Length: 218
Ligand SMILES: [Zn+2]
Image (tube, rainbow, N blue to C red; front, side, top):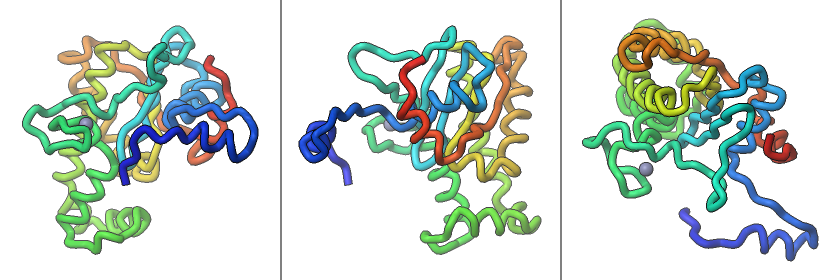
């Protein structure tokens, strides 16, 4: 269900009689990964969470970029294919319509004719079977291609030292991470001008958001 203009902070303040501050969940996870996790060592870094959508945050010179007006950036709604599928935001070919884990899972479910309620764990177990994996390898390659386009855009704009990826992508690292690194390496000289950042996985898992909610901006 889409909810608009609901003042959840005020509702919670009235209920619990304490000050409630709201922050974007991807930003919370990013702060935790920056303070104690996968991008701790890097001043210039990007954190992305790939799950049902794509969220994230950018750190420059050790500080998370925030605007005065609104405290989150819609990285997931960067268009990477003008002719792509329509997104919930109304535009077509957004990064998250093509490179979220939801998209990858939906394509695999469709190709293998699986029940739409199949779990991520079940899908990963199926991919362990070489014959099944071969059936969906094109889908995985296409997914990595789309993901790399979005990452190349971010790399060219921000020139990060590292990009950390969290969300359910991490559960599929065996099938995705090596391919992603290879794809970016292949394009490094052409699109990224030999400025490839380290591609790392988030380390704090589901705890990241809760840890990050307690951290002030760095
Ligand atoms: Zn969109």
